[in-house]
Image 1 (cartoon, rainbow, N blue to C red):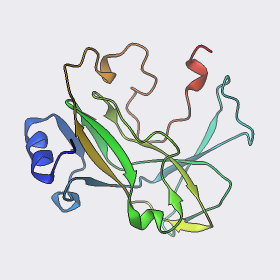
Image 2 (image 1 turned 90 degrees about the horizontal axis):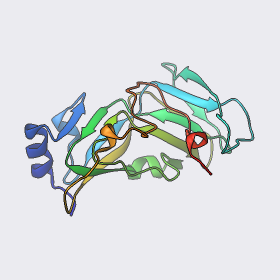
Image 3 (image 1 turned 180 degrees about the vertical axis):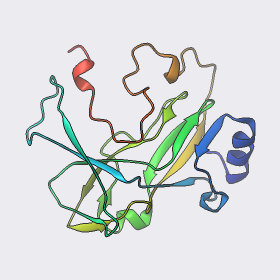
Length: 178
């Protein structure tokens, strides 16, 4: 079940959902709009290796915006820091973002109960498009959880994305055993 606007507000009041910065005007019928932070990154190497630590180069989106190019994966970050202590958060692109040909995540649209951080975005585009820091980029949708949680994400010893950050974080696939 997806939480309604009133339920999201109740959960914010209880502290089970945290959004910072928070502004009531970004609360939709059953979602909360998130915005693009000023930090982007690209991988240093054109060919990525799932077994190696692929390093990234960070840069800031200038005031005049930045033009995304097709065939390049950009890592972005949400302006908003979020915490979710009793629900499963899903991040989806806004329709206005999609209509510009921008995808904000390749596969990582679901968070875990206990996820406490900004969201790293896996951004790609269909054609060149200028983006700006602070632009609405996605929406968080919260799902109710059935059953008791045994281990929250922020309490897992092997969680790879627990460190609080304001910049995008590269893939940590290389930390997996395979």
